[in-house]
Amino acid sequence: MGNKYKYSAEQIKVVSGFEAVRKRPGMYVGATDAKGLHQMLNEVIDNSVEEAIAGFCNKIEVILRPDNVVTVIGNGRGLPVEIDSQTGKSSLEIILTVLSAWSLFKKYGRRINSNSRGTDFAPINFLSEWLEITVWQNNKIYYQRYEQGKPVNLLSEEANNNNHNSGTSITFKADQEIFKKYKFNPTILQLRLQELAYLNANLQLTFKDLRTNSEKITRYHYPQGMRDYLSEMNRNRSLINEQAIHIREQQDNILVEVALQWNADDEEKLCLKDFHGVVMHHRWRSNYSERDQQSKIYDAIHLLSFVNQLYTLNGGTHVAGVKQGIIQAITAILPQYSNRDRQSNLTWETLSFGLTGIISVMLPQPEYGGAAKWELISPDVTDIVSRLVEEACIKYFSENLPVLQKILKSQ
Image (cartoon, rainbow, N blue to C red; front, side, top):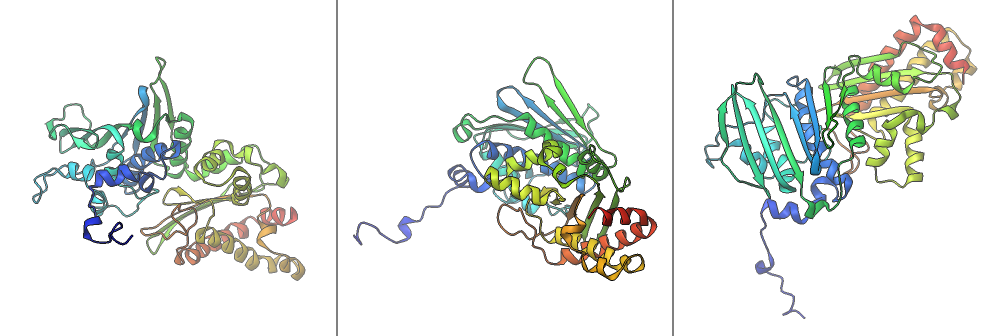
């Protein structure tokens, strides 16, 4: 038996990045089903979102074409195209053919990584039947095509005469050998684009469906951002505070945005269907059973939470900070207007009755409790969020005492 199963250097096989990704695609996009297919596209979209967060992009266009082909165009700075002195290849080719190369390039002016799996462009290229990339930069247009992960032409360069100042366009067709019969779902794509528009007030996103002769175009742009998101979620409810409590502050390199609104409806009305496509979208992305999904999402409905633009189904330290801040704020104000017995009954369960809230935090190196990134565990976030929420709630309730009284009466 010992002779049959050797344990030596002969058994070690070094595989290329292309082979590694093709052999274990789930490690890079999560799965080889519809979720993995959409994850490929999300990773490309997220690159432009990162440019928007950094202040270099305000328009993103996603085009769904026949034969399951998709294009993402962002008007950011454009991916690097310079020639690398060590390899003689363009930076663009390195980004698209070397694993983790883009992670290094992204350090040139990016503070936030919004990619949900941290996947670079190379795995997307390796899992595509073909990919075409165009970069507008330095008053020039750069173009290259890849098939089965390999460039089929040198990076071309021509004068930019179309007034497209800068940006990147990536068009790809996912390899059917990997993803079989799965197709892009326009509803899922639109829900994600709408969500990104809500979370980025200055970002305009466009979805074009060109799969039929009748072109369908949907645009998403919400100037009030998160407050527009909250208005949509509460549009069929009897609001206690018509004007949402809104916070957007940065402390210790952590950007915190929170919107809070209470309503007087019965708790039964806070059901999944009231959240339209938002909840359906995140149920689809999760790995929970349908029964577990409904339970967990119902628990999370009071505070819809995001970290670096990614939904955190199980909340985490940022959500804990919101809860703590609300309780501390009301506890601080209440002695002036109520008796001690009322103060002793203050719990999150009572104060969250009728509450709808959204919290988004952005930080350079978030820590998650698990590879799926459903829960934030970065310890410093709780105190920062709690302090900001407490200050804002004390100020708001001190100036709007009847609102606080209505919230407490509804308990």
